[in-house]
Length: 571
Image 1 (cartoon, rainbow, N blue to C red):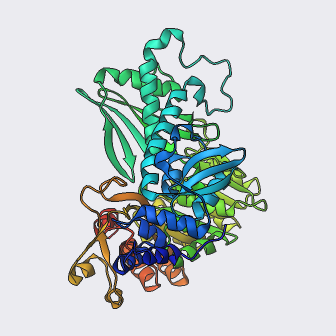
Image 2 (image 1 turned 180 degrees about the horizontal axis):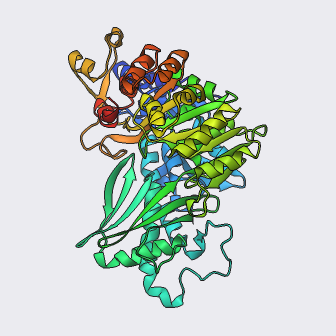
């Protein structure tokens, strides 16, 4: 399909008197700020004649034009593509003929969604131009019906035991005499589906004395989504434990399990489940595991160009240790899996020790450590080194024994990836020394440290510009040279809009990437403290977390308030 220049539709609209020069200029500025196309910026402009836009697009690209108000979406194919994908690319499946899927699209110049959709579905996409306003309205209805269809089809055969050795003759999850549990089954299934639809990362089922609360963690923030009767607490916990293949009779100790939920013929979602006995019952937390996060690609993570180059350089080194640090929920696992995905070739033998294994990676030997039987990180590492590995990943360096084995591996021709719970890159070096690792081993084995946080992205549809005095910006981490070129800072609109949550949608990584240079090695050997190491890293040209956040705010990706929130502990 031939692609017209992005300005083609805009030019046609101006010729027809449907678009004026000031509106076009606003769209161009918006496109530059967001890094989007001109067409996308035009469609986001309030007051645009979307019907005229669709007619111009149809004429310029030679594609059919469809009035969605006259189309019966009840016959549209469902379950072929996920809701997040359809919303992200604003595609609407219309009908299918053999291996061809006809999809409604407002901007035919945007080929990315079409090509990705073809890859994921295995079908050939045939675009049909539709009015953008109609598309958004009909997409909501389509996805609502799709979720209802999925929910009605989620019976017990949709719950797949994750364990490979699960006995096929095991007791069914429900039976005829358990028909009074059907409402609980439907409610739990609906909560799980709603979490997937809202792109939540965690689900919390929480019992209290006088109420029961269910919360989703979305973009790092918890929000309450339901408050069922307290009397249902035991039945909800029991249902989740049955689904996760846990012991439902044991309520005194924590338990771990996994659920695989089939949401369509081709798509399944994994949940990691943990129960915790509390004063008023068992709290159950589910972590939604997204296999696609391991294949996002380094460009999607938010590294600055120089940071990306340092990471890729360290990954291609034949030996050394790459440490990813940060608090729980800062995206360390995604960074490690992204690195492993880059390294995962037929020429490399890769082994990982994880607690637990969150995402299965084809071609990588993954071990779930189990300290109860003596298989801890150190034991797994020692076993790896007897199996001729090229790359080793350790889920976390928790103690001196694990650190010593990992460092030995890094010094003897292996590339080692691991994590530590520290606030910054310099603190990582001092933490290793405090564990008891000799300074010489730290200086000669560690090659790269990545400290990271996740900040919420501003909603591109409703973010608004803000004015901040230069003196205040300097206190927040801006430098005098930042003001040499003009930039616009944005803040979240109070209350947000229908497309976001409180002015934010999605998250972006903020990174401090420090390569261990000869100067830093000398300081490590001299047992320098974290402050001295941090100052030396800045003089070597490595940005700290606050500075990296400032760059994201300057680019209009996030807000100063969000940067202050996520980097407060790192200074």
